[in-house]
Image (spheres, rainbow, N blue to C red):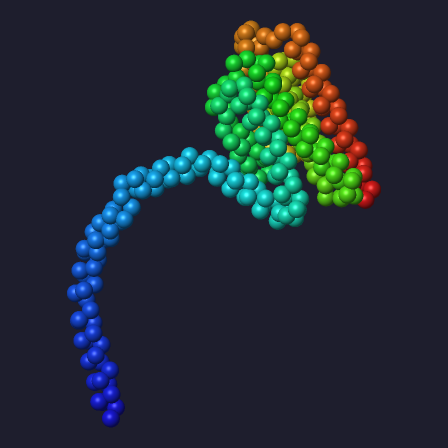
Length: 279
């Protein structure tokens, strides 16, 4: 009985496999031609072109997708360190800051990339063409801190209204970010702003950047210090360039805006630091 059962099981397998192999070969060889012909008949040329056009639109928004993905990556990294609510808040404040630069540069006709977010460094935008003069560079430079200051101020007002420690902490981050970026050392925003006020201010900003970078041993700060020193040397050799010539009226207005924004941001940073330490 066992031998008969074995024969019954084995024979159908051999017959079935030998019968099914030829049809499979035919489908794999000619089936795709039939499918393609059906596709062309159903969609026709106009609809095929619409699909191709959609692919190009998707590629056009590739840069936007890159910005979104870099934001998500930064949120994930910071959420692991500080919690997801605070992570979303600080990334959003960075986004507001960069949108200030982007808005100003676009209004001045400068082709600028969308923001790119890098964990532990911040966010950057790339100007695809150099500003025509120091005046233009300073306007683009101060727009980011202004937007960032307003974002932090909204967090402060909302935090006091709803008695939210989270919003107050985000306001502290926003004001501190503004103060840091206003340090007059290139490539920070402050370094770009003072190119239209007086290049001599770098003599104050660069030592401050070097001191705090070494005191707290911040690798990013050390890198910025090196770049600032290099830029200062290049500008000193090219100090007679008309690029740095700005009228006195603009220097006064930009100087007042810069120092007022710096002082106000530093004031709120100090007060929030004291407030949060008492909680």
